[in-house]
Amino acid sequence: MAAAADNSETLAKFYQEFCLQLQINVNKDVLDVLNQKIKPGTFTLQLPGNRGRRAQRLEDKDVFVLSKCLQNREGVTGLDVSYNNISDGGVKHLADLLLLRSSALKSLDLKFNNIQADGVEILANSLKSNSSLLSLSLSGNQFGDRGGVHVSSMLQVNSTLQLLQVSDCNLADRSVAALGVALKHNTALQALDISRPLLFSQQEEWAMHFSQMLTVNRSLLELHLGRTGLTDTGMEMLAEGLRQNHSLRCLDLRCNHVTRDGAHHLAEVLRQNPTLEVIDLSSNRIEDEGAAHLSEAIATPGCSLKELSVSRNCIRTEGLLSLAQALKHSPTLTHLYIWGNHLDEPVCQVFSELLSSGRLLPQRTDVSPYQVDGQLFLAEVFQGLRTQICSIEETAACSSAALLSEVRGSTSK
Image (cartoon, rainbow, N blue to C red):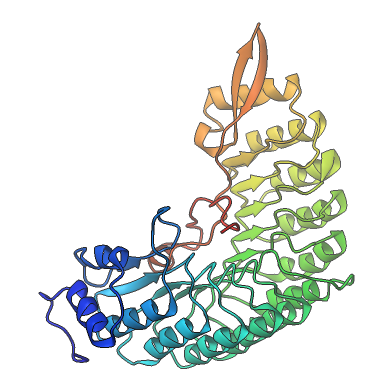
């Protein structure tokens, strides 16, 4: 049974046979997915627990059977078991699978399960010798600082992993700083999401470590720092590293405490950094003065910014008009998101003209003009900046700027 299977035999058959041998009840939802035709080298098993209200969520025993089925199955390159009831025991089975030289898994999605620090340690140890996995999502598992340190230790050794998501995992100051230190030496990771940690230090030492990392790291393309409590002081520290970095393409700073001073530091980065293409500053407080700083930088020759979100930043007419003017003159800026600011009539008029002229395409902003009794208004369009981490297929095949659409609300189970 452990030998490589004939292509004509389906995973569903192996699953049923293993369930029978191990006296485990067949999960009908799993069986339905396994009955699908597999395209060699491209197939991802989609078994998220939130795929339907009546879906039977996977337990550790289900993962044990799945790991047995996936041994020597080169056709399956991805496994999505997010939003299930997998604990440290189930992770142990997946770690055993990753330790096999025959493992073909390139992506593993474990977000929002019940994995604790011990399970993360087991998984991290397996990845120290694994050379196939490219994408790992652990977001939403509450493994805390100890688990985060194990992830950092793995990054010191692993030279294959390209995408890592550890947002909403109760990471604290020690593990976030350790991640920054690890990425000084790691040359493989291309995208990192550490959004929503639990940071208590008022000195923002983690920002200093990440700044130092950015001065030497040449592989990281996306960095997600949403809800980290970043202030203008932390932004100033990050800016020091960003000015010397020439690889990062996407910087996600959503839902922080960046004001006009922080926007000024970021604007100085844009004047000197030739590679930053996507910046998300939504839900900060940069106001008019911060918007003016960014506008001046965007108009600077050599600025390569393509996409910017300043939604919900307390920006009024003057700041929004300066951004509109920058958009008109920038040779690179194509996406601009402004909803949640003070959209007075002059702003509505200018953005309506930008849209009607084709300078700003409807799918590249979050506002749409409409009229009531001859007065122009802007309505919200429910689309956001492309700041979600790339899929593993994109990372393997696309340029560094290829980003997927943002998935809103992914932090609630």
